[in-house]
Image (cartoon, rainbow, N blue to C red; front, side, top):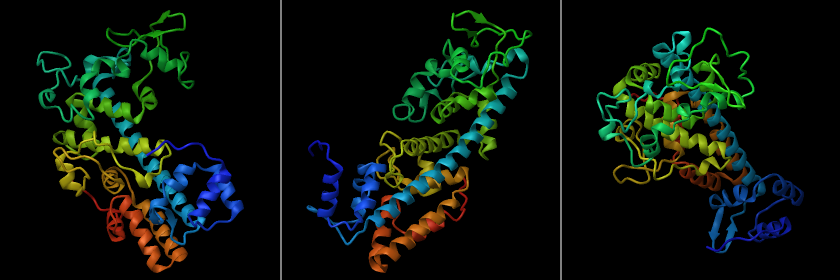
Length: 369
């Protein structure tokens, strides 16, 4: 495949006309001004092509592209809201249960920056403060968890200037509010330094404030480092026992992939996870997942399967309406036969070509780990 060169909008219009797309010229002009051509047309056209060489649309209107594009944006928006709910619950659970264990006194406010209160996945020394009993067989240590396994010391909470950066990079966290003359920082916790690198040892920001600034990826990494006494309580908040630690962390791997895809405004109907994200075998069994790569360990999940995983954490039934609306729009626009054909293609691209399977999955079914 050769590198494609820049084209004027007028040239793009002629290209679409040559592919027999039916459109109003003014409407197409507006689409080309407001949307990325690659996402809007190239990203969706395989659903509509009658032939690929030369490319030819089968009696397709600009409105048909628009229906599918709007649908994609709507489900992406719903998924972002779902993922926000999961992230909020994770942050609330982690900060509460960690603080209950390590930060109950004033002088312990910053203990969440003390790496000795966590476990290092590589640490197999039973006498070490950061000993990890899972070290010898850490899940996917050569795949998606490689950095988590190898770079414990580099985690953001353990950086020398973590507290200074936390205050300086977040306008809502002000030194004047988070200092107390009675606070005396213990050893091994972050200390606040001003722009001139002068220490102010009376500054401490509680974990439940600081954790709101962490990304979903940083939260997932933090979960890997939680000691079992804290992790047990977090898992309990999600209806799981400590024995399900690996499954829980792997489920969040795929929610992180979905979160990143939504954040980058790519077409969510084309979503699939990278081959480097391996799938726990118990998750495959419990959720009935269908990884594209069935080698051991399996990898590559499409949207349908990741929504199944998401449904464990929150209500995904809100996705039913936009899917149903798109199915109806396609049939009304293209007729029953052609509409069903297009509907099957888009559902298949998302991971399951049967509308009945989507309705069943989005009915509120509960999966038990």
